[in-house]
Image (cartoon, rainbow, N blue to C red; front, side, top):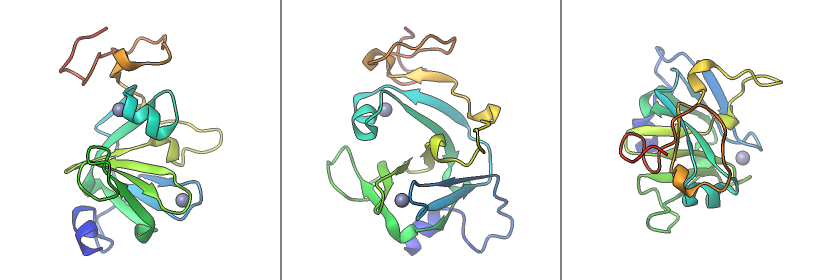
Amino acid sequence: MTKIEAIFASAEDDTFEAKYRALCHCNAVTYEVSSDPVDSKICHCKVCRTLHGAPMQWAAIFHKHHVRITEGINHLNYYSSELNKYERSLPCKVSCSLCGTFIADEGRNMWLAFPSLFDFGVPPSVPKKFKPTCHVFYSMRVIDINDDLPKWSGHKNKSMQL
Ligand SMILES: [Zn+2]
Ligand SMILES: [Zn+2]
């Protein structure tokens, strides 16, 4: 557990000011972020689609030191889709062991949060900084999207735009 806490904002860090709060379906896992996301993307790749059981995945990216797990750190499950193993080999998927909600994709430095878990009110009022800036792996899409955002065939800035 100390290893996990060491890379996130510490619970004792008085300078940490929660800006947004996220929670899993069963509320066992909650976390806070102290900043706006550095980017926000919609991914159409097969791994995201399969694991999330959804046509696409919306991720907002934060530095891990702007993230603080507030509840349920002992309920976090880790899954490496590269190794096909339940282990915290970064990058990996993080989920709630009780309800199965995917919490985030954890990278070495970054935390790819799923804004769908954020508490934006009812009905949700999504801050501008969370609005997706592009679609990635759009060549893998199962649903066409009619918006003005750039659509990359693979990774952003490292593939062709479609
Ligand atoms: Zn849960
Ligand atoms: Zn993906």
